[in-house]
View 1 (spheres, rainbow, N blue to C red):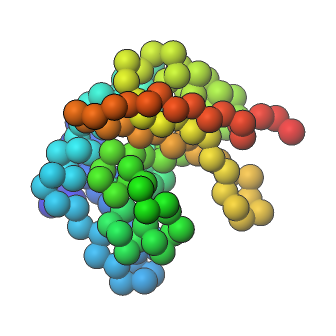
View 2 (view 1 turned 180 degrees about the vertical axis):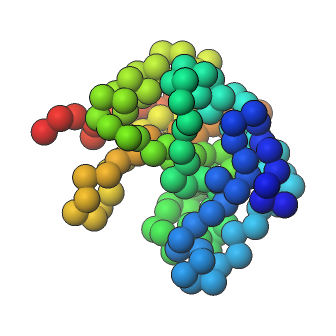
View 3 (view 1 turned 90 degrees about the horizontal axis):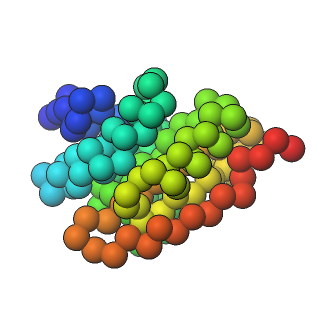
Length: 149
């Protein structure tokens, strides 16, 4: 099931894998509705980003079942729970700035576009992208982490 192609450049396996789930024995298998939601996310937001970037886009966190969301400290209203969110790995500050600004200006619809940084001592950060299908997309933008310090 995890090798299902959601869109030309994204597979379901990218959105359900989790080291935390593996380590804690959590079954992070999505329902068919969630698979459909992930497909919508890919087609509406991630494929356009992939076309702009002209390089692979890596997902660091996608779908989270309630147990996994709790284990990673996610909020109870997280779009990850419904398959409408992805955290995008950012390879550098410059690329992160480029991708973030492109998505903010060019994606026709999104609910959240947020830069986030690890709470660990590492300097890793990612872009959280969420969309809602058939609902209100707030176009909430929070961008205060991808800066050269």
